[in-house]
Amino acid sequence: MGIAEPILQKKFDELQAQVCKTWNGLEREAVIEIVRSADYAAYIIQCASEADNSLNAVARDELRLILLGVAPALATFLPLIKGGRGLPFGPAAPQTARWIDRMLFEFGTLARMRRFAALERYGLARSEMVDVATMRIEMNAGVGELMDVHAARWLTAETMRRVALMQGPTRDSAYVESLLDATSTVHDGWFINYEGHPELIETYRQRAMIDVLGCAEAEALPHDAMIGGRPFAEWRTLCVAALGRVFNHVAYASRLMTRFPALSIRNLLTVPVLRRDARAVWIEAGDQPKHANDTIAHLALDAQSIASWQHHHEIPAPFYVDVGGGWLLLPLFGGLLNPVCGLVRTLRLRHTRDWDKAVDGREVYFREDLKNHFGEPRFHVPDHGMTLRREDGSHITDVDAAILDRQTGDLALVQLKWPDIHGMSPKERESRRLNLLKANEWVDRVSSWVDGRSARRIAKALGMPDGASESKPPTLMVIPRYAARFTLNDHLDERACWVAWPEVVRMRTENKEAEAPLFDLHRDFKSGGSLASYSRPEDFTYKLRGLDVLVSAL
Image: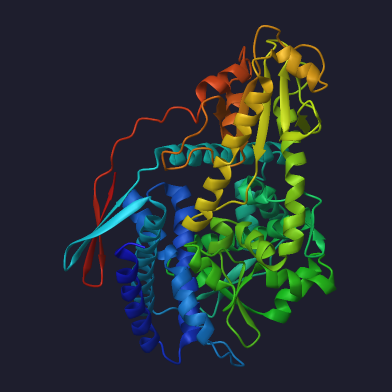
């Protein structure tokens, strides 16, 4: 631990004590306004900016800091809620909204700085006091890691594009708007009221399907893996239904703002609901009555589950927030930001044994993905892994997959890595990095077993069909599902290519006619590949309760 963490912890404690004193006895009101601010920030980032494209980088980052403040703010107030029969829900006062936004911005700035400080534990940053009122945090730029992030974003966009094509043409926007207008009105001069419509429900369900399947978390487990008493595919379908309702609500709110510009969008986004009514909605949508309460519990945020989000420096992603007394809030920000990660986190934490059993099926799924992108008749990918043994029959190591290119004679022996997604947690990130580095031992063992033999001889030894080259050796590949290049200057054995799965998909999608794709991958990603050009960003100073924090990238 460096000097930054204890100093920032003290600043956090001071802020927490201040806001608790200010909202003493009004904790439920505080949570309502926090969710309203989060919904507004997510709405502007994800929806309003899509329409006019006017949100600049500075404004976007300010909204993101508000969202980063949600976890510590809710962790402050949710445990203090004592419930009550009613719910103090009314129009948001502009002065209160501004106060809550400032509080969340300060919590969010502290959350970002505390994550930067936590990176120091893993050699990714260093901190020092310049003077009594100024701290400097220098961080590793992480160019390689950023390259993997960009590749993952490309794969998300490509997946969404393909799902959208399968959905077919969308409904005419003018017709959709007419349905929205015909089935909605303003309640009590400030709130939203709508009846809904079957065509609208289906329209936004289809859109939700695109977004859900575009999330990396949507493939966290095999479709048929049983967890918490249901197959993972069924859990994912619940996210589609919940996100469809979010999109439906956002559409109604946006249309009301168009028709009645004097309304406040902040008042239209967040809606309260009794738990029993939320349960009835799920049953009406087809969820079994015995499962409905469990469905809500897995999609909800409460005083117990908020701690994990704060600990891992994440923005929460719920479809419900429990405010006690049988009342729930229906937030939009979780679904708009990531409609699957909240559920996946809950499944992993609540059903650890099921989860650990289910992840064993990822390798089979990964091989099927390889076969989809390296298909017959040109390529051959066995539908099983292979075991390498010494002459005495003792075990050397396993080869998770192999790819034979009959056109070029190239043969690749592959180790597949599919860890859980680590998100913003430095601790989880370090675990994934160390797990990846274990593949160095695999590369060494396989290289020793190959021992200069040709691709043809190796293919024959592994029971693969003819077509491998007699003049070329096999190549070795380590393919992690998400990240192959971490920030530290790790040694990745240069006898193998280390390439994240999104990069493989991008190469096979954008260069379908490549003459020698296996050779190209090995050339471009040998030992992780070369880094993109990097322009050091300007230093930035964050203001924290009497302390200036100067952040710079090395």
